[in-house]
Length: 154
Image (cartoon, rainbow, N blue to C red):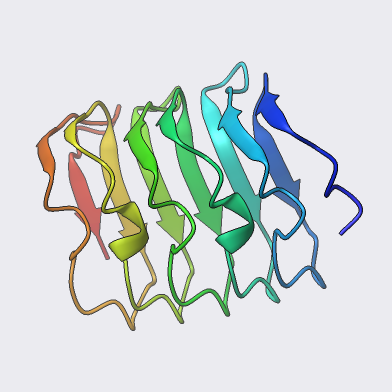
């Protein structure tokens, strides 16, 4: 990938939208921290139907100050690559984790590094292959979003 030389910190959010041919995030392995957008997202991946792996984010460690948002990633089967993230902040609407229309998602074990409180809601919608919430065992409390939801699975 053309970003292999990128190292260390991104002061703002990682936003990738409508990258319909992108199958991986290879090239971001040396990024260790990500900031957040002015609306509160740290990672926003959307309309990426060919995305098969988040392993390019395996260098991330510690807390994400904003929300983890992955939408319309039809081929993504796991969140492997995010294991070293220990905390996730929240978006303006109060969501901390928002996973939407991910029909191949089978595992949340890539989030096993999360510990203690999740300040906002956990939202997973249209992930028919997801059979368990394994990977979230170390979360002790979950906040809520502006709609009053703490956990929304549909």
